[in-house]
Structure formats: structure tokens, C-alpha cells
Amino acid sequence: MTGRLEGKTALVIGAARGIGKGIVIRFIEEGANVILADWEAEVGSATAKELGVTFIHTDISKYVDAEAAVNLAISTFGRLDIIVQNAGIYPWQLIEDTTSEDWDRVMAVNLRGSFNAAKAALRPMKSQGYGRILFTSSITGPYVTSPGHGHYGATKAGINGLIRSAALEFSGFGITVNGVEPGNILTEGIQEQRGDAHIASMVAAIPLGRLGSVRDVANAFLFLASDEASYITGTTIVVDGGQLLPEGNDFRLVPTAAQ
Image (cartoon, rainbow, N blue to C red; front, side, top):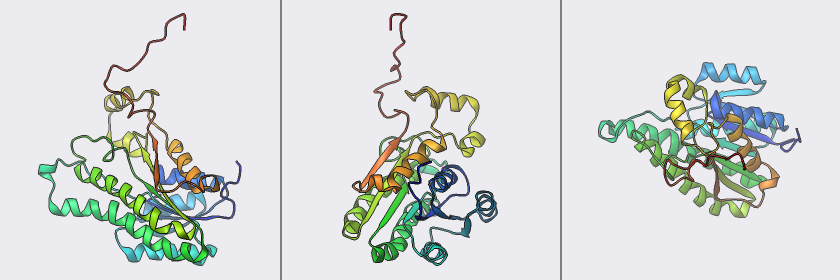
């Protein structure tokens, strides 16, 4: 590894499993000090113990929890250089079956949680004149969607708007704000909740011919967290294996023997 985050302190929210855990692993490999935050106390604590990092129970929909997580990073390591807001929920619900309470809960975790993370991180990053604020967005909402993801897609489109606004407001303080938009990623949740046939149909829609790995997404976060991305702000990186590219289903070229 290259030590791209050597000496940096990172807070990763929503990191008990899946993409968040992968980000923590990648950041540790590159030398970062990491605080792992998650609302799942038991799983989050076990993951933190496995990876040798500090855990804090965090409901990111509550500003007081976001602030507590930021304060822990500062009290433990003296500063906060990177914050990743990866926490999100995506209950499958058709719009006609979604109650106001259902809608508000998804908004609270995914969108208000992103606001909470950015606001809590701003004070220390502003005072030190440096920071990387990163969000997990999605191709679902900003570009594509499917039935049952109305509230989820709305939050991810909203996160992209927040990224641009925060990037502009924070630019004078040495703080960049960016996001990663994963496509279909092979996480534990996908493996547990989707059958082989469904996963195969997802793969068939991806030009590169596979689902993304957690590490594919973590590598994008690593780049945006590093000094290599110091002149990038207010944007997102799509990590989808080319899923957004085809105009229709018949997109695969079949190589001939001559080719």
C-alpha cells in the first residue's frame, strides 16, 4: 500500500458491514486512523473489534449523535480530516403503500443524516483549514430507478444537491465535498435478500459482466479522500461497471474469431 492517508483521521458512518466496512478496511490499509460509527451496536462493535478501530453507536438522523461521533474522533486523534456518511436505509415500498411515517424515516436517515454529518464536521474542519466530506449516493434516484424505491431515490438525488451546495459553501476553508454513486454492488445484503436468478438478471444489465465489489466502491472513496483529489469538489464518481451506458438490452458485441 502507498500510505495515501498516513496520519489522517477518518470517521466512517454506517460502517458495520458492506460498503462502509470496506471503506474502513481500505482507509486503514492506507494509514488512516479510523472511528467506526453505526446504529447497529452489536454488529458495529464486533466489526470495530475485528478491524482494530474505535466504535461509537450513532443514529445519524440525530444531530447530537453526529456531533458526538465527530467529537470522539477529535478527542481520540486530535483532529478530523475525513468524514464519510455511508449510512442509509432502503425499504422496498411502492409509493401507494408508503406512509408519511415511512417516507419521513428514510428522509431522516439518508438525507437529514447527510446534512447532520456535513454540519457536524464543518466546525473542526473549518478551524484546521482542511477536510474531506464524502457521501454515498447512488445511481438510483439521480439517473435510474425501479419500482419500490421512490423515497430512497429521492434521498439520493437530494444528497447530490447537498454535495454541490456544501462544496460551494465550504470551498473557502480548504474543504472538499464529493460523493460516490454505486451501481449494483455485491454486498452481504444483496446476497441475503436476492436470489441467484435476480442477481443474474442484474449482471446481465452490466456491460462489464459482473456486480461491483465493495472494494471497487472503497477505492473510489479512497481517491476522493486523498490529496490526489485536492482539486475536485462538488461532484460524484459513478461506480457501476457501465450500467448507465446502454440505450437498450441488446448492447453486447460478440467477438469473432478474427477479432
